[in-house]
Image (cartoon, rainbow, N blue to C red):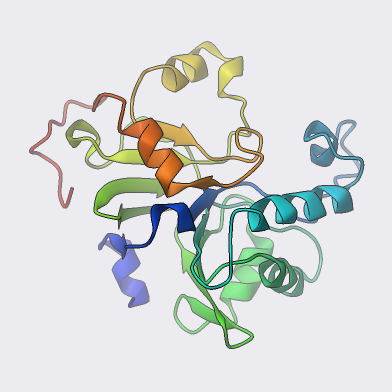
Length: 229
């Protein structure tokens, strides 16, 4: 895919729906010493390393190197030497291809992106990493989906039934009235952050969940007004 296409053309992915995995906000190697309650503790682990190892194990329990196409929707990796740490994380994750957003914690993503040709990087001559913007549109097995690091109140094709998946909020939407209204609206939106999904969610699972919901639009656009969805 020409990297310029990511600005205006939907990504097109076809694969076994169980071999497409979506996740966000891994926060690999995140050990914030100034936090009274560090993120690894919030996730039920005893250290940053135990959290890193546990999440990698959770991913690999649902993935393999030959068939898996992954989506990581941002906030992937932390720490000095970010590019090398990000490479080591990607080496340990099972996948054939993976599409990575930067998120709002983007240093490691950016450092590895600087080594890429266009927006693609081939790791160890085997694994394909594609760097994606924090918002992009895709057809996954023919279904339109808007992927974003951040949750959106309005997205392309919403009135026509397109899906929206996001991370960033770490399961915190339930803590405000606006967030609860959004989360419980019945719209075809799903949060893929680790806090909501300790294991990556497959496209088979996402499609089963979201296809049951109504095509609710918050912005007045109907089923015939979106392009290209």
